[in-house]
Length: 116
Image (cartoon, rainbow, N blue to C red; front, side, top):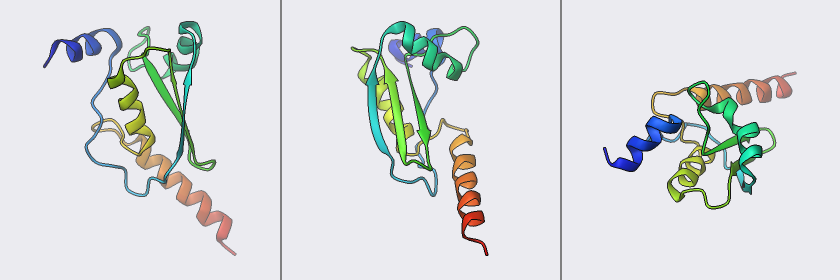
């Protein structure tokens, strides 16, 4: 493990993105927002895997709207932005099922909307 990944894991609890794209994940319009540190903490800390750790960046998706928003500070490390971009393209954390559940929920809503 190189030093930057060790530091990342130690300080912010970052995790590994799965090499497999979530089946059924739609193409989303990705928008990157660059905000202050205080705004980032308010927006992203709820997604931190460990209580009290500050996120470097985060993303929020809306499958019904077809959007994915990435939130980061100006100057955020390229690897952190790439991590969030991969999420926007349907790659969950390794061992995670959040994206699979979101796709299933989207399909259920669509099925209800088209049923007679």
